Image (cartoon, rainbow, N blue to C red; front, side, top):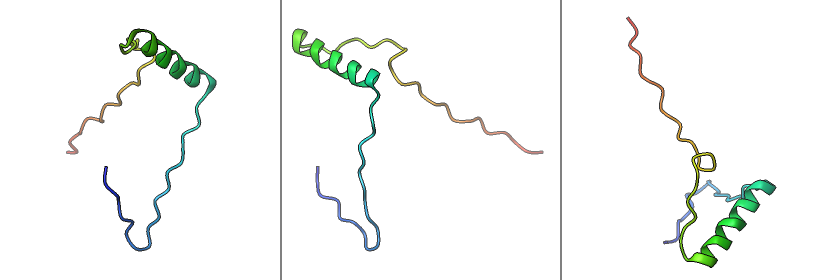
Length: 61
């Protein structure tokens, strides 16, 4: 990755997203599984993020 130069008058801030205890446990389980097996843990649909579909365009007559 390269260095990103800030434009004049613009400040970039990167704040960490707070994790819930459930998210922390899931991450810990994923890391432990990878360390044991060397493979990625298969995620169920309930734990993976849902994609948001774009609203359909409607024509106005």
